[in-house]
Length: 283
Image 1: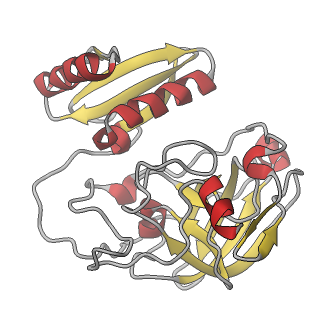
Image 2: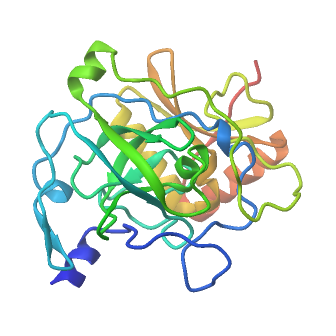
């Protein structure tokens, strides 16, 4: 039953990541540049569905009852992170796991919800969106994405953290705690590499060319299309972002080094997956 429960929960991590071993989890080669500058998740009100990833479940003989109320939560324990072994696979929420996004897995926090994670060893803090279940080892309280672990300087392995949920009441009041200023972080096995694409979500300030896949009044529609694009081409995962502009949620990918490369990507997606994308006019 525990095995079946794990499978039903999707791509949650069950052990700490490690590098340099083909049969264990770890980073992908040549991660995108400037991951330390990726913006934290921005808390917003998202309905918590009763059932699905929020129904009680059992893993490895332990029963878990996800929180469904808008209640405060604070815990201290060990954080781990998960990477290439789960990158591109479904999470417990059904979304595609992107190790370069600001997300995390938690055993009982609502899916979706938001949490502030603090590394007491250096005072660094991040805001993550909970969209997966795990970890399922005693003492471990959260599995972070690669980027979230990088920003907390936890890529070396497991480390103690404080996890504090950001409630609806705090989001409405705008009183949820902001992260501290960034400091230098450690990136394991990072040999000098050619310049790579910037994954910062601030489109207006980013150089290069951008593609737009659609513009929607509702965020859910943009999120749905983002998952479809990600499933068609996993290499676009770190480049996909939703920008709110002129009252619409616009799904974009970029920056590409040139307009020609952006057009080539659009043509390939049209031919391979029937996805339409247009070049964003330069400003």
